[in-house]
Image (cartoon, rainbow, N blue to C red; front, side, top):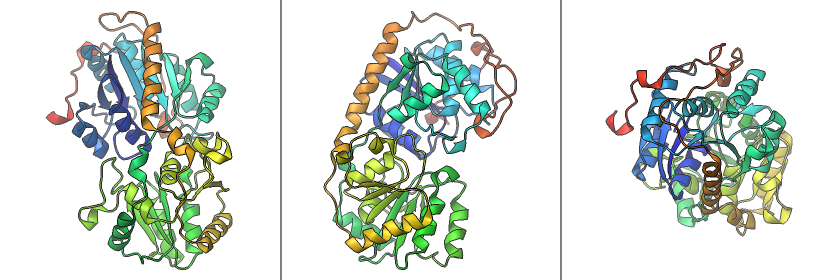
Length: 424
């Protein structure tokens, strides 16, 4: 089986890291296309031995990417195309049909009730998604919560498959040596109470609530890993409340899957090292698709406060006794953190939920979806297929930023194929 994964970008992020983990375990020959900037995850995927091609999209309305992607799919002789993230799902489904591939699977990694990939959901986004979804054979939801959202959008039940995200639990096991090393590098007192957080710094994640709550707790430090448009706002907020020396915005340093805690100080801690260094993990987002960071924190034996985590919320409470839900309100979070501080920084036993979300199980479940899709797919035709135009509504936000017209499907043979990253 030859599979092409199409993803919007390969900067540091949960969906991007999940793809890398899956590629290591899928019993199929896989290659990857990234529509935009390759980033550190692309480097890691290539280091693992998987070919990565950068399509070189110049913007969200770059329709010239369609024939390039279609030609790449056709020339590659792929049995199945798997798309990840909104823009890649839209372009990838259309391009696969142009190339004559009907076995198309899309994973919905980040669909919330009112946001998608941290951006506001609009009528245009939904319309474009539904118009292109019917070009695929299956849509993978990372949780039952996402599956329910897809059904409400009108995606047929028979095309929805739930395949939860997975982790390598052993990587997040508590390490006392890493705890001391990370704290020393960041200049944190070894006996300080330290709060951790990780994710894209976008409005939907509500890290402003976390920063404000920590500023109300004298002597408490926050380690926040991630990049995004709110980083400067969060820095100014910390300074405004006189807590700039206690709010540590780490960026994406150490966010790649294989980054280790050693190296120069400028490299910062890796995520497993960060989890060993903190005493509690907070995920303030009120609308998550899965909650991967929460599961990683539980694997490190941390108590967790979360605004939304389907990975935990969909299971009985005894599967994750160290996880506690809270509303994204500053005073409520500050009160919960004070209570945990009084208890002391004791590590908890790794809960059963962590074993449930093993990446090997996720890869096996995804492979089953591939086999079902291929069993029902028609024989792949030679040359480009004819596809009816897909109506595209006027753009209403960045995620929907495509021309306000039907998508024209040009002949992919008239556009040169992109080069792999190794030739860039």
